[in-house]
Image (cartoon, rainbow, N blue to C red; front, side, top):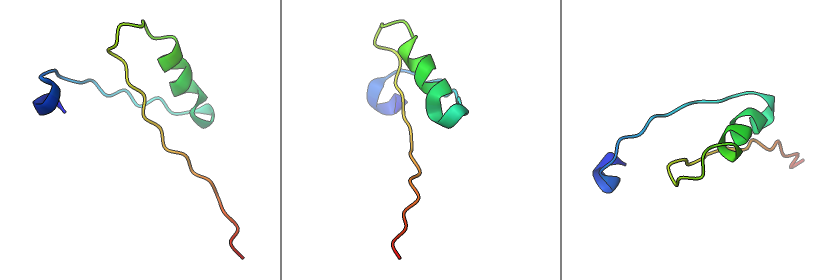
Length: 48
């Protein structure tokens, strides 16, 4: 992404509480346009 945006990135993995810890960090971040949140969700399916 630095090649696209011309800016460097810091990755902070915030795991715990089913994604709530990372989500809270994003919500409380300073609204300066420099925070992005990515999440993956695991949903078990019973296809039987």
